[in-house]
Every structure is written in C-alpha cells, then in structure tokens.
Image 1 (spheres, rainbow, N blue to C red):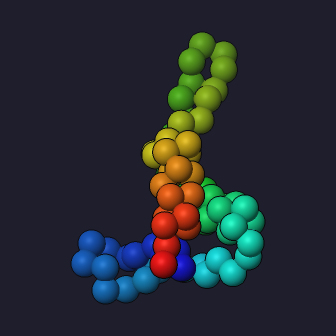
Image 2 (tube, rainbow, N blue to C red):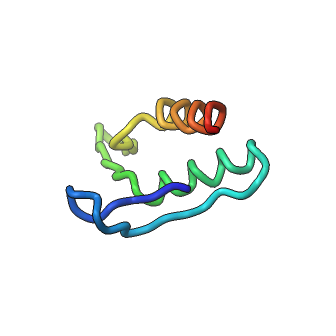
Length: 72
C-alpha cells in the first residue's frame, strides 16, 4: 500500500493506492502514484524549458523496488 499523508502528524491519509499486480506492474503503479504527488519545477534556460522533479525519479524507483523486494 502506498499513501500520501495530509499534514505533518500522519494521522490523515490524503490519497492511497494498493498495488495488487505482478512485481513489474506494481513498480509502475507506484511510480505513477509518485508522479501524481511529487512536485515539478519548470526551469527556463535561454529558449528551452526543462522540468526538475522535487525528488530524483531514479532514486525513488530504487526505493520502491527495494521495498517490494524486501517486503515480508
């Protein structure tokens, strides 16, 4: 189960999702959940714009894979 808490005391869950798929699909579901809730900054450089996530997606994906791999 993945959840996003409202506030700082973690007593209220604002959004959650339960991954019930096979492992590769569950990782994709978790990443989709993260993309919904992570903030994106738009950085404008000269004539181009690039997006920068509030957390590196590669690091987040690694954490998700580790959590699924070592879950009991």
